[in-house]
Image 1 (cartoon, rainbow, N blue to C red):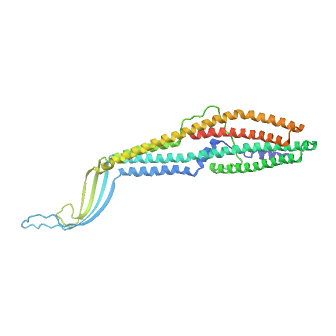
Image 2 (cartoon, one colour):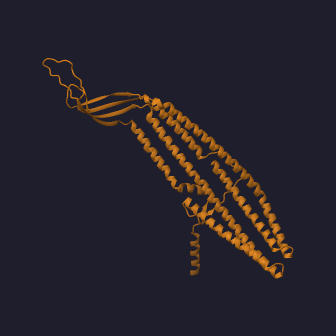
Image 3 (spheres, one colour):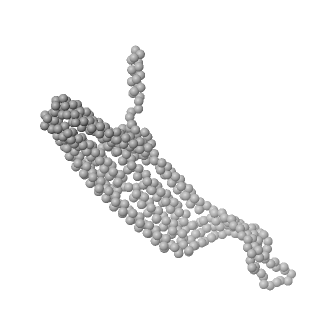
Length: 419
């Protein structure tokens, strides 16, 4: 009874063990994007944009300023005649004044609105630049993901080849007993076994390194995760370019529009209210040569014509920048379309190659079996037979490599176009 209970407890325990984690290429891309340290920059850009917008809105608030001055004049206002019985005071040549002024904008010529548009456009440029920087992660994750799949496929072929060599070792040992082979033939098989094991050690080290790097990107332990090889359809992949670099160029063009609006707004007049409270000597009554408090209020209209001096050249610089963006866009599309055409050519090459690989593997296996029979009959040397064994193994490795290259090129094309 105790034995049965122990077995049941073990069964329950094994049933609760976590299943081996599975990772797809899309899941790795999403995890890498979320785990990359640069992702925190998105929030910082938005915060900076919000602060700049709040600062721009404060331009609508009353603006308070305080100024003070002390001056000495070479002459003052005088009444050029005298009146009997009236003492007309003489103003002092030293004068003092402290002024507090409040200005309230009524219309600023569109400067604040243009500034806010410029802030938003600038933040969008930063965000799109961030997208471009983050997009580079995709290619690195793809390389690691498919590198792991390729090394695992090669490790499986290595294992099968090792079993094949072990069978050949036993066969040649029998051939030696029957007098159709010698010790040198057996040594040749052992050399091939040792070389195959060395290759396995190298493949395992590469696979382990790739898994550690992938784990660092996605923020998870990928040492024992099962990577799901994606399926590749026969239908052609979309070739429309949808890269973040294009959205970055569009955002920069929008920023130039905002800068042009802000440039034009500088040439508009402004209208506002003002109130001054002051204390000085003299006050508003120039005939009273003593400290007095006074106040002034009114409407102020101003128009700075100095901005017109540089307006034409500043607008021309924006046009130059716009033409540069247009050239960058055309250059990027040209280079990207070249990459698309190159990848499409590689896809067609691998599809044609794979269509022949199965036939090549089958023929190499037939040749190997025929060679094995010839060795048994004593009409072929073991050395020649081992060459046929190696060729058959090479055909299998090439097929695995071509299949993985087809998948990698398909995803590389998706990465080039962002589709």
